[in-house]
Structure formats: C-alpha cells, structure tokens
Length: 222
Image (cartoon, rainbow, N blue to C red; front, side, top):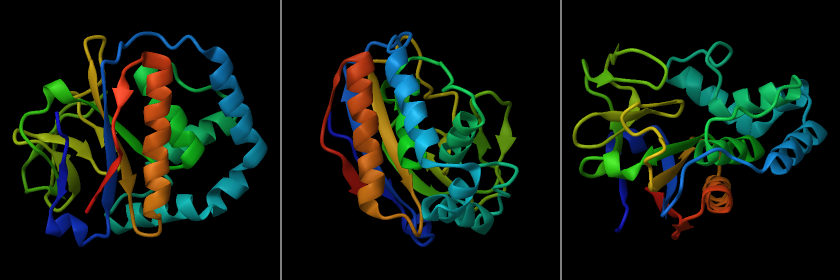
C-alpha cells in the first residue's frame, strides 16, 4: 500500500515539512532490549548537559517554532527535548511498547519529534494543514480539545491526528493490535531535511529491530 502525506499551502507557508515512512508487519509488545536503551541513555549523557541542550541549534529551532504558533516551550517542551531532559536528569526512557519506545529513542538521539500512527485506523488521505475553528482533537492522555483555528495539524478525512508538532490523537495510537505503523518526522524552519529524514530512518530501523516488520523508502513533503 502506497503512503502519501500532502502538505497544504497554508501549512507550507509556516515553513514546516514532514519526512515519513511505513513499517508493515510489526508485532507490538514489550521491548526486551534493555541494553540498547541503557546504551542510548549513556550516549545522550556523554553528549549533552542541560546547558548544552538549551543552546543546541535544533532545540532552539523547535522552541522558536513553538513561540511562533503560540506555545510556551518552557512549559510545553518539544517532545524530543523533553525526552533528553528526562535522561539527563537521571531518568530512563519510558516503557510503553516496542514500537513507541523505538520512536522515543530515535527522537531523543536526533532531537527531532517523531509521530507514530496505526495506519489501519486512518481514514482516507493524511494531510498537513491548518486547523479550522471549532475542530475537535482527542489527545492521548487527555480529554477533548476544541481548536481555535490556524494551528498546524495532521488530519485524515475524519479528524485531527496530530497537533503539530507535539501531541498525537488517541484514534491512531499504537496498540497491541497494530500491524502497520506510519512513522513521521516533524520538520520546522531551521532544521534541515536530511536530519528529519535521518530521524525517521533511525525510527524505522529500531522498529524493525524491536518489533519486526519491514519499512519502505522515506519520503519528504513538500
């Protein structure tokens, strides 16, 4: 099955783009490779301090974009930065399942936010666009949110799947029944396409390693 994500002109006007891939045939379950997670955490601790992280140009690019769309990144941090901060403060990677854990590690190692979606729950084409006033969003771990309009979102033909670039919908979350995973890297101004593509490729590689399945070619839109 071919996968394509269209970026509408209104969203492209913000300078945002996505790299994406699909992994088919995954088997979702606990991640058993504790050694890899420990090694990834040590790589992060050897590379960053909290001060170096704040000064990193990729972190700054995502923070700048958050300010631009009306989100205070000191209160709602980019997911990739939040994951690295957790590790730097002595924590470990959260354990959700092998697919989500793979995405979290890839995001932390590259500083690029990664979204994961159960393709079988997507209805119609996936589009990156600006939200319409009054659209409803059902985030993972939250209730119902009414969007003001103008927020960048990833949506299918029914509803919003991703409040770009930081919150995913319950509708397409990865569960034990998931077999096809859309892997999406969220690009913003100041972050180069090759870095976002690399983040997606790493997530795909880790999903294949931890959960089986096989990915395809990573594409970029627009």
